Amino acid sequence: MSADKRFRGVIPPVVTPDTPDHELDVPSFERLINYMIGGGVDGLFFLGSSGEVVFSTDERRDQIVREAVRIVAGRVPVLVGIIDTETERVIEQGKRAIALGADALVATAPFYALGGPVEAEEHFRCLHEAFGDVPLFAYDIPVCVHTKLGWKMLAKLGAEGVLAGVKDSSGDDVSFRYLCQENEKLGHPLSVLTGHEIVVDGAYLSGADGSVPGLANVEPKGYVRMWKAAQEGDWTTVKAEQDRLNEISHIFDVTKGLVGYAGGVGAFKTALWLMGIFDSNTMPRPVKAMEGENVEAIKKVLEDNGLL
Image (cartoon, rainbow, N blue to C red):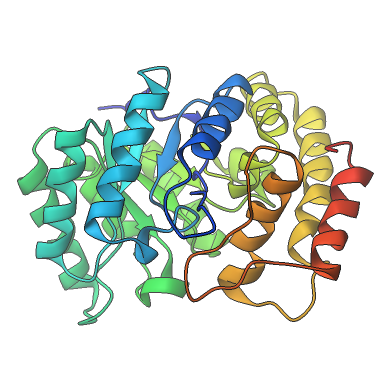
């Protein structure tokens, strides 16, 4: 058994643009998707944390997936987040995403009626049973769902064909390294992707199959060059690209008075707005858009790094 080769390389979590009246900004969405595909990405992940999944009604989720599938038009695989509070709701999200054309599904552990490792494992087994042959990725993001997915469980579910892959945003480098090693021992059943855009070079050295970097919304080509260099064993170039991208990542820390989504995804949206890809930097309610000195601070980072 070996991981599905469709899900390797750079697969950014697509930021969802909003109009000032909080509707989906379809023209901006299309520009962003074409910008990243033009930059050479290997897939796109919609309705992840950066894609406003938890801010979106079922109707809006369906609209995002429908437009994404239409715009992508088969050029790269479409992964869709089916993130919801509990198993039955996740199954509903998944069935709709499949009907709309998703190539793979991405789910976290349940995150309201919190359980333990037994419940998390059973959750993914239930999803696999419901979705059949559609590839299923486990999204490990304990900061949001308050459950850490154990590497032994993930590897076991990969070996059994329950999971096709893992998107790791846990920040646990030890667990990630163990997962990559165990995946190799088992014949590499999982596509293991890192969600940590600042240390992608280290993840590739550990054996990751690719990355899901939010910053690739702003600068996809550097992540693509890094992936290609890693495949060639050119680790000097890998490190140089990571160092360059990390200078751009300071859009996250030059702002003041912002935390969480406002500072993270808010920085992406503001950068994309300044670059002319988005028509505005509107955030989902109740999050306020960046303005004033914070916008100017991000503008300077982009200018200093040749993106404006």
